[in-house]
Length: 577
Image 1: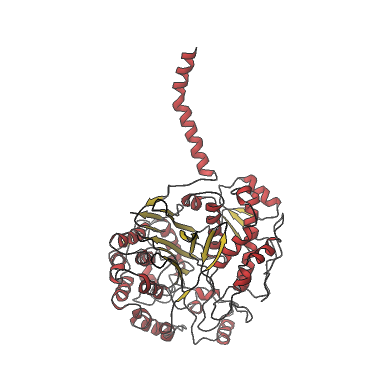
Image 2: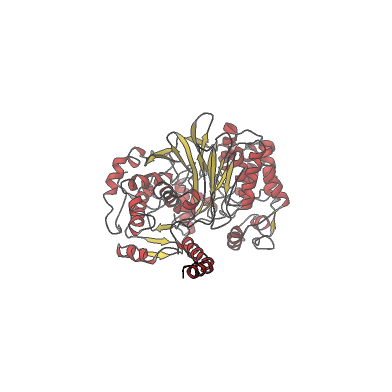
């Protein structure tokens, strides 16, 4: 009998193992610790971007003697060519850099300003004549000075190790010879072309093939952008802000009733700033402040620190409720206080204090908040790219760059190869608002690079794109790693949520949250969790939102290696050597 049972078990074993494997696969597809791939582990360098060829550009620079700063610039240039639906040199840039030799963290605000010669009163008169009550996104009124190129040269001058000619050589080659367009980017590109093709300027001849965006796998080239890159490599940042490109922009703007002028480019400068920070459960989390929404990440973490998320558990109704309510609280402050620090003193001493977080935390109850404003007296859209790099010296770069709405305005000055951003849309028109429009002022920005230190040492550079989703994405990644013990690839692959309906930095100061908004959750959510959230008063929908795109690099000092992670939902790649 025993021999018969043993034989039967042996015959059944492969089927039992297959059944277990199938159950494991099903669990990984819908379970809480689903991940689509392993982390990438390498010793000498790491690059993570949302386009594999751009990742390889950055890696090529590292392997040929460049450092993490050089690799970030080269990868960003390649991204502007290969993913123009999210970024390009017509947009702005922010970065946080760990510099190993000096043992310091540096933050760069490379965002551009509004036209100097367009006053608030003139803007309001133009809007009245157009019959609109806000700055239109695809209008020349929404164009501010592109800051990305100056950001590259600021980073390079301070920390670069190889010449710009070498950094831009691969992007120039791809611009002139072409590259195969990747799948997710192609879909966005085709939508953007169908929408923007009739904009004044050279949009169609720059970004379309026979009137349409390129198909997946189709070879695309942008020789005008390649020529612009050559000018930058040979003549430096002044080619863009004082030379041929600035002159072309000035002439085109005058001919097309635009508002930017040569003087706006000539006067533009990026700014090195002190990053804002808070400590969350022993980890020092850093963001760029001022006219950027990174402060919201820190405010959310301060509020959440008062709850034991590891006890309530990942993706439970209790945890999601706390995350959603913390977001609502931080975003009411975001709508009222984040603005260009040259025009407004952001009250960090209050907003980032643990005491203020404790006061705000008391507002979180068992049900969804529906009536809320800031506790201090005084956008749901956007496409962006995030990338991160690290080198064998220990330098790490967290960089984010954007046109704001997809391909930006679609205004392309002939011969330049890039579209202008529409960040100017994000000014408020309330004259009492800190973020109100003014000449030569930086608008509110959604794009935020993240960085984490642990015990005085670099721990993780990370970020995600996605408009107003970005603070939610940052907090989700951090809680997934710190509270729920996920590795960085799991943290990015895990179930995502979003919340819309908060007050915006473009609203009047009198506006505030008057309902619970809408909670969107990816479809892998357990439906019992949805029912429980609805019982708490949340308006929940499955999917039908944009949940961002993620990249990260974690530094393991004990083993002397980097861990890389990239967005598995689309075209991203982390690679090291």
